[in-house]
Image (cartoon, rainbow, N blue to C red; front, side, top):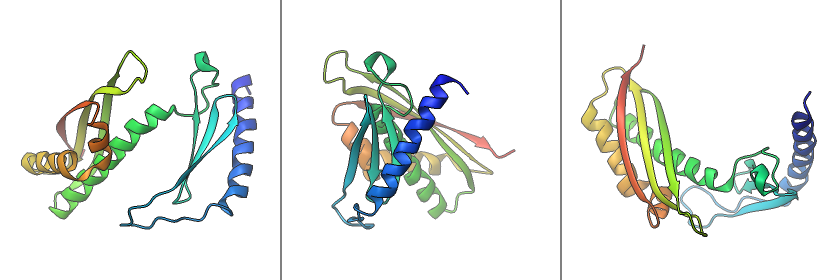
Length: 175
């Protein structure tokens, strides 16, 4: 086992122990449809943190090695992009299923540019959707993506306050 793997195992054990203790003290306050959410972020060591959602899920965050991190978790800004991609892909899948489209897979590939000065907000975001199914109707896929990005995806609306967001898509047939 390499040094980084051993360090990760040590941090992971600490994170698991912390989560087991904290789960008892962090009761969910948000249910589907409510407007209040809670999250908790706990410093572990150096620049490593554990974030826990009010739904009881956890994620490890860490800084880049040049910022004192050990690369054992995602960067917070990466989580923002992943959150937007997940929010929008959720919408696209749900809309296509309601439209009785034969969707079998949906991938949102996201590319982003950040400002060079602090705060290094996202300035451009592009989402490329790869939607797979048998006999998907392109106009239905386009409609689902447009509805997600322009109406339903809260994350893209928030990030769109600082970033120009574009999107495109491709349809693949299920093999």
